[in-house]
Each structure stands twice: as structure tokens, then as C-alpha cells.
Image 1 (cartoon, one colour):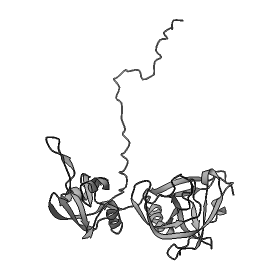
Image 2 (cartoon, one colour):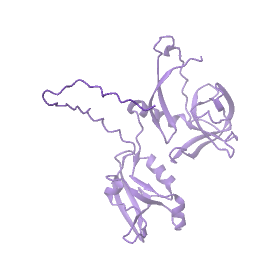
Image 3 (cartoon, rainbow, N blue to C red):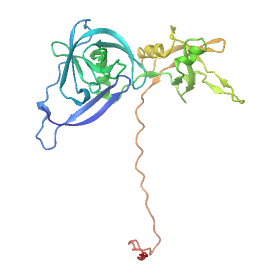
Image 4 (cartoon, rainbow, N blue to C red):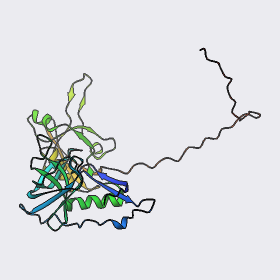
Length: 290
């Protein structure tokens, strides 16, 4: 209806590229939220290849744009453009999606929301007929967490790791630990980070090869296994340390902890000497040379 609304950011999930906004009614009372009609939320579970879908968005700033296509594939996996974390179960479509479509709805023939447009595969940056949308069933859980808590919680080991190419260059598979978070699960369990000795030589850290007895060949495997676990779960970790395989157990920590409480404002009371004139005094004017 071309009306402009104020909105407040409730929270966002960088991994899934999803944000939740809370709309506010206009202070002048001319625009009420009652005039808005929410989209019907469907399900992405029953989507079939060949099914018609419709994408709505603002490609290149052209608002209210509708494109039509079909479901080209389901259960795809792409990497988050924000964090590099894999996104599973993604919908592939040939509906034209371009810069400006991200965050727009992907609808079925009944007008129900089945996905949230998020990315394209294109060598030129424009639509090449390979577009991706987050399935609505996966988005629901994320949105519910953001609305209730203002954030999304995911379990972590508390490590930073090297690119997979670094491990492949060693002729191995796994996740090479570069550093461990102070007080994090990995550090408390005894996972060793990469470091330098007193002569400056590089000593490689542990290489994670199994999580809960499931093979870890790279970061994607690690993320996929962690996504099926919850904060506080106890897991078994297997690492390669030199030529030795070391087993350990740890409890997963929260990957997105709440921000610390704001400190109380500091009040400072100035005690002035007796007889001190508290009125500000003007400094004498100093003429400037022309």
C-alpha cells in the first residue's frame, strides 16, 4: 500500500541470513498495523521437483517484482555468505532471484510461504537460473528463538580452526585447531591449539577426526554434527596429536551468549573547598592580531 512503517530489529541469525523486525504503528495514527495482512505460512516438507513457485522482492531496487519458476531441487546444501557455516535442506529454484530479492518470500501456487530467498549461484552476479531459498520449516525454529530470546543459540566447541586446504596439504583429513577459547569446552578438555616453540618453529595443534564417533573430514562435517546437538550436551571427541589418537569428553557451550548486563551508571560527587566560587567565570578576552 506504499505506506512507510517504523521497525525495530528484534534479532538476527547470521548463519541462516534471517532477521526479525517488529513493526510499530505510526505516531500520527494515520497508519495502523491492523491494515497489514500476514502471509499464510505453508510447509517446505512436501515440496516436489517441478512444482511451481513464485519469488517476490525488490531486484535492483525495482519493488513489487514477482518472478515465476519451479522447484529445481530440494535438500541442497550451501554455505552461509556471512559465516561460512553450511545451510542444509535448501530449496533450489529457477525463479529469477537477483540482488534485492534476499529476504523476500518464495510462495507456492496457493500463495503460502515455503521459503525465504537468500542466494544465487552466478558467475556474473545476475540471475543464472540457479537460486536458493531457506526452507520455511527450518526458518520457523530460528524465528521463534529470535522472538522469544532475541538471539539464536547454537552449541560450540570453543575453537578456531584452519582452512581445509591447510589440512589437505598435510595429506590428512579433519579440522586443525588453531586456537581455543579461554574457559571454553575444548580448552577445559585439553585440546591443544597450534603454537610456536621457543625457537619460533610452528607446532601444529590437534586435528579433530571424530565427534561422537562420527567421522569428521572437514569443517562441514563438524558443523553438521553440531547442528544436531544442543548446548550442554556431552560429546566424545577424537583428535590426532602427532601420531597418537587422543579421546576426550566435553560439554558443549553456547555459541551466542547473551550480552553482559550494563554496569550501573557511575555517580561522582565533587567536594569543593569551602568558600570556592562555583559560578563559572569568563576568561578575559584576548584580542587577535589582524
